[in-house]
Image (cartoon, rainbow, N blue to C red; front, side, top):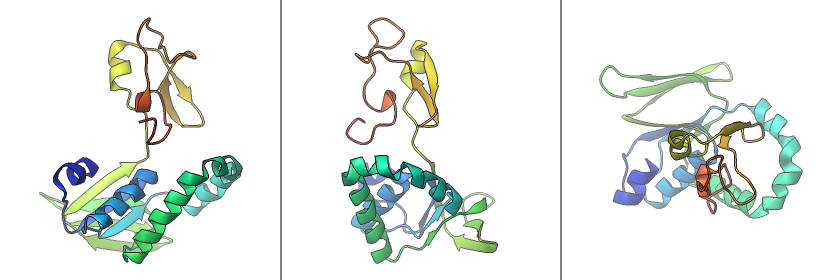
Length: 177
């Protein structure tokens, strides 16, 4: 959806964003800037996960610029009047031949949002297609909760002369990507 927005300047009028992760909010902000705000944001992360993540706040403050950018995006989304539902579960997309609605529960209350377009996003993972196809070794990164290619200090993979940089090397933000 982000590629469609960037390449062609438009998306549907009633897109509902469903999932988690910072790119969900970045896309919402970009849609607002393009004059096509999402109909709603249905976030799957519940309050308990935010509480558990709070222990990482001191390290996150080192990237204050990203935090400030995130808070700015959240403010723009609120100001645009985009409804946001946090802690959604039991999510279904209704429709026999196309999307007609998103149905979900939050805090014991059922919700139904009529829509013809649903964009799903469940967080960021490194772009590993090339390293996997080449047969590079990968390892589980607990802090990023995903597999990343094994790299040395010079970003060389387990295969000689295959170097990996950017979003294929791990989750390191937009500048790295």
